Length: 50
Figure 1 (cartoon, rainbow, N blue to C red):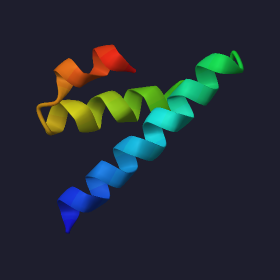
Figure 2: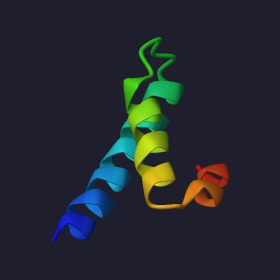
Figure 3: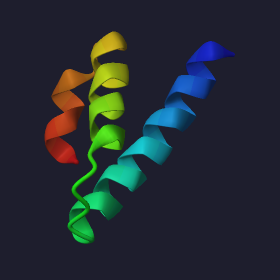
């Protein structure tokens, strides 16, 4: 159950981070939280594709 929530959070945070980059948003909390979740799940290598 927790793994499904983390996967869903990763998807939403990735979309938010992409939108922040596209709109030149100075706030980057979504990207920071995305990196934390990816690190916790040992998926750091996947970050290069975002």
